[in-house]
Image (cartoon, rainbow, N blue to C red; front, side, top):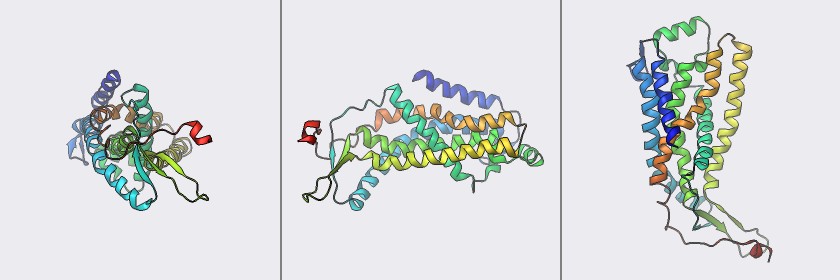
Length: 269
């Protein structure tokens, strides 16, 4: 985990040192090098930490309250379970979905985000003169990923908190013609995010491949990094996830009655 966290810092530093155009980037009004420092290192790291701290404590209670009105027949409970969120395998699986959600949100922004705000005037003029769609150039992709990573970490961490707290809900109707339901609460929340992230990221990646294969040619570097850069969120998310593990995995514990596990013998009896 430490190696991966250091890797994210190294990637950010490389991005900063690779800057050639010293012009001003409109988004923050900073010289290009300082802009890259903020967008590829400071904000992804600090922003992910802030979102991992605040989002679960703000939005998990809101979701649980709304669920009570939307699904009034379901009762909440807590299973004494240790999900071991600190394990590298657990983090990596969750981090992959962070990157996919970044892709999905990136696709959402393509229609209305002012992408020119991520380019210096000289870079913008050069791309426009070459007839290149600036949505798919390296500087813009890097900036979008840096901006969206904290939001993706925050949104997904709400579901992580409910999962790591062992929260379940159940509906055990007395009527014999109704089927009972028991499931983890986090699945109601996170399945929508994962579904959106998976579907939209696939569509977006297809559109990128189509653009570089059939619309514009000779921009191999932009093509590769446009496809790969969103997965840099896997590294960016490490700092926020580490803070999440130490702050938000148990704050929902003890708020609902403890429920036991259902055994296979009980189900088949």
